[in-house]
Structure formats: C-alpha cells, structure tokens
Length: 509
Image (tube, rainbow, N blue to C red; front, side, top):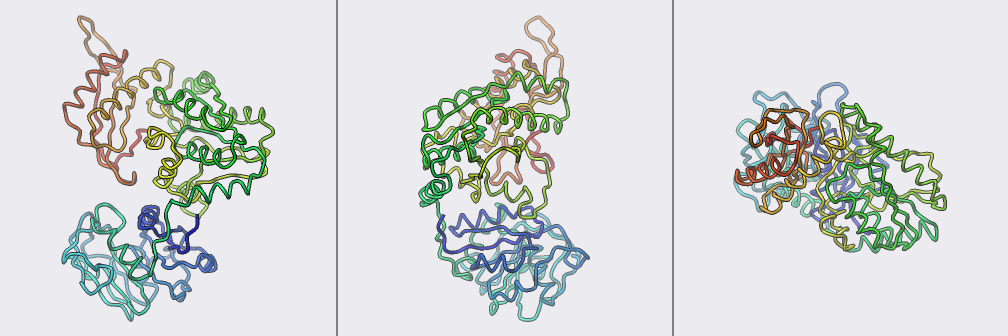
C-alpha cells in the first residue's frame, strides 16, 4: 500500500500496543510497532512523523526496566508517552518517578489544562482509564504539567518546544471516551500528519505485487475457512487466476454447515479448491485426550501431516501462501514482543516444504482492515464477518475427551444458540456454546435422565483484549435453553456464563 507517512509505536511491554497502532490507523495514519530495543537506524529508516511510547507493567527506576536508546529524543520527532511511556520519558530526561501514595485503577476524572494541544476541543473534565502504581513526581527541565487528577498531580505533561507529550492514562481504550480525540490532536496538530492511509488502493497495489513476485508459477495455500486465509485466497486468485491451489483440511471440528459453505464459495472462484476429509483421522488421534494444550498440539501436528501429504500431490506449486496478518507477526516474536500464551491457531506449517518463496498479502494488516478488504473483494458477509473461531475448532469447546457423539451434540446446540441470538438482533460481539464434561440429573416425561450440561457464552468487546458478558434478555436465554434441551439429544441442562475478561478468557479452553 502506498502511504507517505508513518508513526512508530514503541513497545515497552504493554498489553495495548496493538490497540494503539489500530487507533492510529483508524485515524488514517499508518503505524508500525517496534520493540523499544529497536536500533535507532531502524527508526530513521521508517522516518516517522511521530513516535508513541506504550505502557508497560514495570517501574522505570528498577534495574532491567524496558528502555529505548537516548538517541530517540534527539531525532527531532514528536513523541507521545502513554502510562509507562510517559514515566520513561520523564525518567530518561532528568525528571523523577516515584511510587504512588494512592494508586489509580479504572475510570478516573482528569482535569486537563485547556492550553495543551492534546486536549484541544475537549471538556473541562474528562474520564480516562488509569492503571498505575507509579507517577511522575518531578518534571524534567522544559516540561509543564498539562492535566491532573484527585490523586495524581501530573496526569499529563508537555514540552512544546521539543514536541514531547505524556499522558498517565490510556487514551487508546474505550473506557477513555475522548481518547481518540487526544490521539488525533497529537497526530494532526503536533505531528502534522496528513491522513493519507486508507484501504482504497490496497487491492490494486497488492495484486501488482503478487503478480510481480509469482509470475506464471503456481501457489499453494492452506485454507482454514477463517477470515484471514479466505481473504488471502480471494486476493491471490484475483492477482493470478488459475494459478492458486487451496487445500482445505476438514478436521471435522467446524461449526454446522461451515465446511459446505467454504466449499461452495471457493469452488466458484478462479482457483483449484481441494477439500480433504480428515475428520475420522483427527478423532482417532484425539481418542482419550482431555488436556486442552495436548489437544492443540495433536491437532496442529496432524494438520501439518495432512497438509504435507496433500501438498506432495501438487508438486508443481512453487510458492506457499499464508493468511498471516500483522498481529501474528507481532505475537510470533518477529518484533521481539513477548509471546504470552499458546494461540488457538492451528500449528504453523513445516519449514522444509519445497517452496521458493512465501506469499503473505495481508502481513501488514489488522483484522478489521482484512475484513474491509474482504468486502471489497465481494466475499460473502457471512464469511467476512465470521466470529473469531479457534483453529482447533469445536475440539476445544468440548471439555474432556472428544467423540463424534459430543461433536454432533455441540454442533447442533451451537447452531441453535447462534440462530436465536441473531434472530433477536441481540447486542453481542461473539457468542458460542461449550459442551462441559459435567452431567446432571433431569427428567424428560416420566423418565429420569443423566445428560450433559451445556454452557452458553456471549460477550461484548471492542478489541477482544477485555470483554464483558452480554446482558441478554431472559426471554432469549429461556427460548434458546428450551430449544436446545428439546432438540438436541444428550443435553439436559443449559447455563449462561456471566464472567468477564478478566478474570476469565473468552474461550473456556
């Protein structure tokens, strides 16, 4: 994609680095995430119009705390420090950071100084998300306070001459209602950004790049049916019609009707769609397995085995394509970011497959940008807007051992739940069912039953980093529970999960 300007987001270990980068892109300014340890030459190479320091869990005054090169402050580029990033700036430039007498967590009233450009066109009082146990207790030379709270005398600061700014709160999260306006003020009124980043030219530019890279050679893609691999397939097939082979490994853990929909969509494109029915093979491998991490590893390894066998039948494919997106690059450690959990995605493909190159047309995009591209490529809305779905699929939405009987049970119950939520037009960003390993006594007619308990899950979130359970009408829950108990044999009790994230995760396993 052609864009003239970028902002570098320097990662100091904060959980919101991707959210900061996304918010900047939503304001039509390109963003790049780099570790705080990135060489100064890498930043010069990007030539950003601005730099943002992220938050982080450490105390700047302790040994080993994350830091960037002092050269960053001599580049003449505007900098915005967020939370830890603000404290690091103060510490590095001669100020002082101390432990708070009273820590601040959650939504907090912030009183901004109207003269500060960050708070231009904002109110006299703002609500912002605070999350800190340290604070800037003494400003560096050249800085002035720009906001305060009841317990934090310096909740924001500024050095207008060098264009250095800091906020103790998190403007990137939804709990700071006017946070996006603060970021916008920094980008456009401090950095002089032009807002030249958008999706309009992406397809045309990427099609040209794929054609140049691939030429007349064939490309092999492991198609999962998820948003990323589906959009990658549609984009590559547009660039090089009839040169793409898509292998869809059907492991038998998809939701009701999904495999059939995927086959229908991609069989109609200018590509070679190959569906491999491997359901029985995966079930045999998982017999007796109950631990979720072991399930993931077995499914990932078997996926690679099946893909390798099928790829051998298409030896004329010289390029391998993947639906890699920007968060995958960041979280895989490519940017030296911490890999904090085992992902739900099916395991990576083996490195020893005989390909001369890798085609990753979505590598620089976030998920919302990938969906926008999918819409422009005329993919069905049901596919483009598909909810997040783990690579191992229903296998990790079944607690305990996986059997065909349990899979069929969960598939039907999940379909009923999703249908009821959608028919009710209920407000929920993700909703699914989990088959627990718990049985309980019930009654059907004159007979005693001892059937499984099904858990329903529905959450509201803007970023999937935090989530609240969806406050659905009791009438909807009652209708779904009644249908499931009556229509799905083997389920005798239905419960609704009302736990947020944190402390829970969205998925159960």
